[in-house]
Image (cartoon, rainbow, N blue to C red; front, side, top):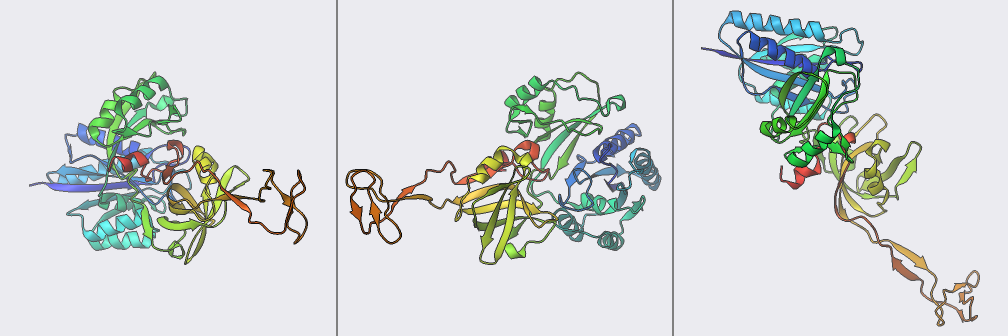
Length: 421
């Protein structure tokens, strides 16, 4: 007879360091040393990317442990809480760790709560009520806001899934430049793409974070085998402390909700919505590209921000009347932050010219209501239709996406769409 203990952990990191996945890796290493068995891979669940109180990547972790006695359950909980207390950045005012324990079958109500946490806003009261209803044991540090994500992590369904292998640094290297051979990363990408993806961006390495956290690099892909094979191709010039492979909802578009009308969309949520470009895009201070998308219900400002780089060049070529499907989330200013777009239809654009004279020259206006006059031969025309010349556009119908360096953790890259993932 044995029990399966579900464990969820969230909100242990800060902008200055640590990583909830690292705490998970340490926990599992110590549990393994105690002879305990992990059931399946640990889960890395990315939550609503627009939640106001999110940590850097708004990621929570969960795992399942096979336990054979009440004493093992008690000891396991004590060990896990000890590691969380040892490594969490609790001195940071924005870090509020939460840990949850649950034995039993994941219920539909728990799955629904998890999906809501990925897509919408969830309150502490909602999390605590669910925990009470389904008998989840909750441990809070400070205000314990991490309970929201910890509970979501253990119940999150994965209709689509990816994997991430994370390599961690030794403590003495935290905050130092990561010593990864970039040529080896490019070679790894060449050999493993598209089974792994987002390894490079415009030829440069994209697997390493830029924060002083324990992560050396992360490789994302379609299977555990793919990310492990890719890891074996990466050459580094500093020791790796440990590695961990997570099953995850990253790059699945699980955060995207279908909006049938623009006026249905709400702040702090992410959507896919159809519409028509109302005005020609324009550039604002900072290099951000802005345009308005409209439908019969209303309109919303859309933005391709400066970090999206070449994606902005495509957005800038949109024109009034173009039909789009846009993917993105709504921030505090009510602007939809674009993750990708699909051009459904391009409205033809024209340059309008004065008519040509019989001699071949372009005529000029002869004055208000006086028709046209040829500047070469002097011929006058009282009335003549203007000439329309279609503008050749560089855009085509189809998808356009932000580059890997600007991609949100949950946003599905086009390579996964094109390969039927």
